[in-house]
Length: 342
Ligand code: AMP
Ligand code: MG
Image 1 (cartoon, rainbow, N blue to C red):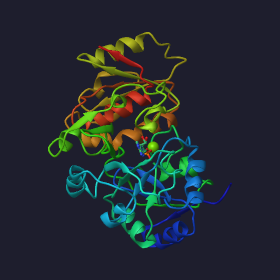
Image 2 (cartoon, rainbow, N blue to C red):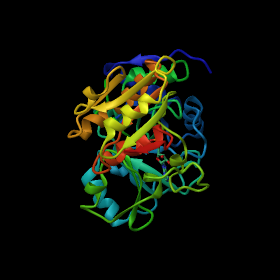
Image 3 (tube, rainbow, N blue to C red):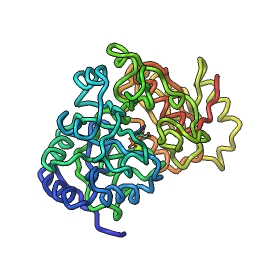
Image 4 (cartoon, helix red, strand yellow):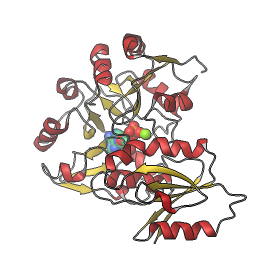
């Protein structure tokens, strides 16, 4: 359905609250990326999220709460170590997969008996949830398959005329989505790396990495995290990730094989090596020594690739440690797992 999409300022937050209470969906900022929220307990409202995003029905949504009391209503049991994680990392970019209670409709969980939940660390998100007095189901507010939105303008570019409103809170802080941790198995299983690193989690509990962290799950019939089987974060351009010890020279060598009169080639480069590419469109991700900065810039840069109408983009690989695990996970997906080693 076509509709006019309002951009709301923080002062107009109550307009968003009313929309949520009336079974509509609204995009809002969190500390990770913008979410597209609706009342998690209202099937019809949740349907609107799937429709606006073009999201496959088996890809479950994360429910956003403002308090632990609200969380306890949605689940049946919580492992004691999961409670410890809640204490240390909430509010924050950590979604915990727990067994769901009967009040959570299956449309939210993609048919699963488990539900992913978190308390976001963003004043507008928290106020919105508190004032609506509802648990809010919210996936990233992008068209399915596109890079997640880190600015209100990104949401507008994807969802204008498909949703009634976007609450504008400026750029989001982290820039990559929350970490998704399955706490229904022990050791807990990391399904998606994100804002909270596996190193940080392991200070409190045992964590195993799901295969989806590194490998393509597209042909996996039953991945533990259904979202991981879908291609994600992809610009229209062909993206190639280059890893190893001689990245700039390998990229320059690969560029030589291209006909630059017909192919518009770009590089996503770190600050340390950006000057090593001549005659190419270079987009600067940030310094290798500041992975948080790279995470914050990542999705905006992937969207710029399309705005600049690049045909082919080489991306410099980074470490898989700390925040690098989440960034590299998204880059492998953006590249459709096309990785070259140098
Ligand atoms: P997004 O909403 O774009 O942040 O995507 C949500 C992610 O959380 C997807 O990768 C889902 O597969 C994952 N997720 C949500 N709920 C569950 C669940 N109950 N079990 C496993 N993974 C989940
Ligand atoms: Mg998403």
